[in-house]
Image (cartoon, rainbow, N blue to C red):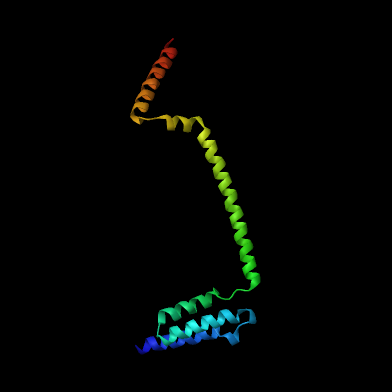
Amino acid sequence: MLKRIKELKKKFRKATFLCHPDKVSDEFKDVAQKIFIELKAAYDANDLKRVTEILDDLEKGNYFKTRSETVNEKYKLKAAIAKLKEQIKTLETEIVVIKESETFKTIISIDDWDEYFKLTKERLKKELKSLQLEIKV
């Protein structure tokens, strides 16, 4: 129990240092205030799990991003979306080509695969006999 309390205090202090409204730039003061209040409530409730989650998010930089970082991420996402849309178009074109191929049309027209292979086998046997006769002549 004492170890848990020490861990809680340690993580709380570390998180407090990362999100205290007096220690962040002006553009993040409102966000920092909300996080600080949530952190304090978790600490007062002895909620080690929530304090740990908040600390992890703070260390990963999930709360405080500058406008330029946000804009940069927005452009990256737009570029990724454009790339995915292009890939979708390519796949759609490939699907159309496949659906128009004779092989695909043959495959979808087969109702009974056993019968299809039986007939194909018979046709190939006849063709083999015909070729063997040609060779003998």
